Length: 144
Image: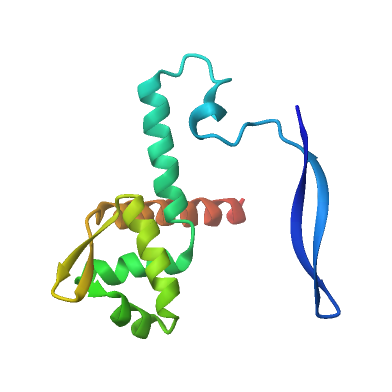
């Protein structure tokens, strides 16, 4: 195993520094290789799990989830979403490209306008189901 420093940007009295933390990588940083130690996992199962992990990674920011909720109502362009959410267009554009890469949204060009729409509304239903279950479990634990 190779020791590789992890560089963390920090500021001290307003002056930016890169702080190096020595660390040993135990898992390679390439795609499916992290599944190498899981016995009995087929290539098909590895691909399915990797796809699901990418989808959940795309859902890992509250703003991206909110964007999906807005797109569930109707298709929108980047500028419209940015205005509704009160954030910069570059952020909306980046998040939409991540959601598109994960296969959750698609884009359609209408002249110079590009509209994005939700192609997997079931992902929001799954999130609502999981949210309800988690909240019920938390409530049960507090009552014990």
